[in-house]
Length: 155
Image (cartoon, helix red, strand yellow):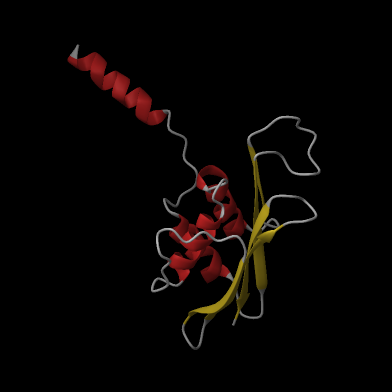
């Protein structure tokens, strides 16, 4: 019996899919921002729709939908993979609050603050090397649902 239990536990552990090399949103987001070279701009947009699908989808009845555009840039793709797996949909503003807390650790929101639209601009890095980061969260009129866009402009 003891040997069988070990086999069951091992089987359960190997069945858990890995999202990416990184374990947290902070890790993948920081890797994305750090990867942007001087005079280079990179972006990603995570879209969510709660209570239905996007306007351009043919799905009839879904509870929610997610999509993420990383522009083929590998570090942005890692952020997208994380958000597609673990990102909030119903309370999509929580993704923004979490991302902002990752890149600006002293920034905090009260527990019951709900974001419905927001825009943030700040620097990440040192005076000599880093990125200007823009985070925008807004209703996406063209596609439907909400869009969370992160742009990093390296300096």
